[in-house]
Length: 149
Image (cartoon, rainbow, N blue to C red; front, side, top):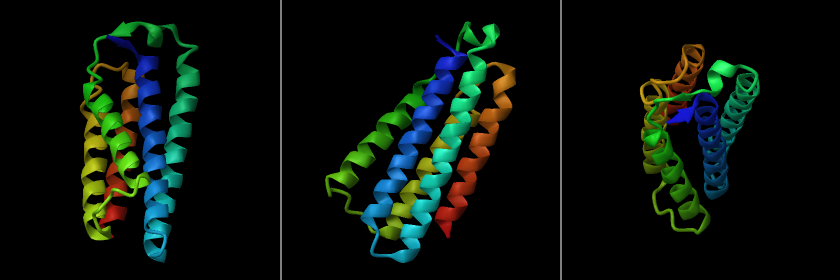
């Protein structure tokens, strides 16, 4: 059980961590100008997503119906938070061994898991938030296309 607001907090955390992840890859692949540009663009977009989630969360605090406990399974989004944290740690520790093509493939799969968690995994959120999470899923899938090249 969580509140809609707590779900928004988790969603913001995913966006912030994903921005941090892309920043880590921008540093990791900085010798490749096109990779640096791609990962910097993705970082910036994830930061924009986090800002949008934060603004929606501020509005949600004013709406009592969004503060009620709801039956929503946040396990998928929580697993993504752990996964992203692990990847960031590996990249920052210099333990990331995949080349750019393999990294792009891994990140495309991660973006799909994020999209799925946003569109399917948060079914219990209030109807007023559903469209927002569907938009996030759509943006995650757009990131897959950028990563595909």
